[in-house]
Length: 513
Image 1 (cartoon, rainbow, N blue to C red):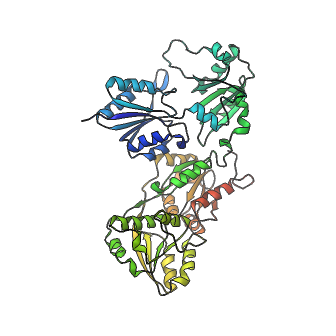
Image 2: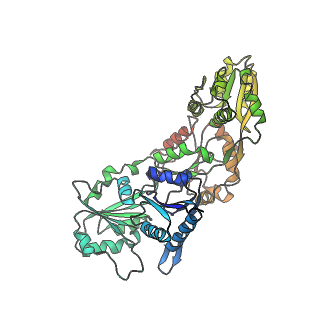
Image 3: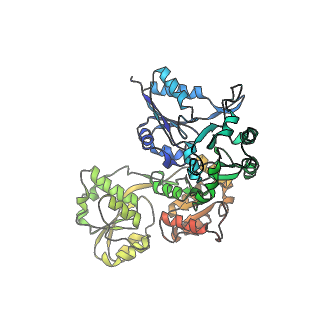
């Protein structure tokens, strides 16, 4: 068996968008991923590989990573012929112990490649509005570890040299030693009034920055209860934080928003949440499955010319029909004689992906509005509705009352998930979720079944629910879920707009992040 290869990949800090293109390529081809706790788990959506999270173990010097165990695992997986990605926060070679892993692989005769990542010092400070080498502040920058090897008899840091350094100092992983670090620099001659900052959880929705003089920084950081991971930045460049902190000005910074869409279809919502500064929490309540038996679908697609209209009320319906046409040797030409209707812009956009345009899209994105728009056009016509295995039956009823002959064709299955991810359940129980988006009545009803009883006291308080439409709101409330606000535009973008409106200063649900 040919041996595999190990890629030591830097994932960047926090924001999943900071992964490099080469890093993405490696994840796409990986058989196994071994990732650190600081890696954003959203990056694992890029791979179908089996993923193993490294964990810290208790030792005489506190909790630490067992590096030898990681090295052994990488070698063993490669010897099984696997393509292995070792995914590390930041950059593998900047306080990341990547070189140690490379040495172990080299000694074992395992082929490896190092894929650099965006290191925390450059990314996190930029997200905090701090330019480390602004021409008016510094012409040099020093990266320093605040967490040395605990087995070393003496510190390798020369604080007198650091105190004289003509530029910006950046300490990695030094939060737990902040009083000792600042005291040592002041004792070595650095002015107590030197501007300094600690950036906590940088490039994530929970980023917080505390600035102060070097002397008073430990006290202010303790009062703010900052948590690791963190960076300590020392130098006049810190003064620019207040004006240039673009990331911390995002409107939903610090908010955790539950995305209840099926997992494979939540990418647009993940991207929108991150764009607004929020942390998307994936909590699918339903899953979309293909048909187990395509016989009825295929027979119906064989006679599409019998129909005047083909109506879609979901993106899933569009993709199921068009993909099945292709899989059975046909293509969009099968729709040449039929008109197309979509329930809203997302459905219309899905048709556009297949180079098709909807003939009808209502101004309001719900079945009642679609039926109203079609009513005058379908009398005496044959209509085919491509639908899920379950859902509301308003549309066919209204179209039949308008004189249409309506056939319903189930083209995909809508199934309930059995449980929420354990991390989501823990967050719900702790009240550590700010908003949950409900995008359909079936999702609302299923969420009501999945939320544990001991988490319900947080609903409507620390954890608020937003419905995509009045119909979904009614279904949620009937199931016992209190809805705090409802979108006026019946899309996921509308859900985010409703959250933004509710979080505006002066609104009844606003709270300072």
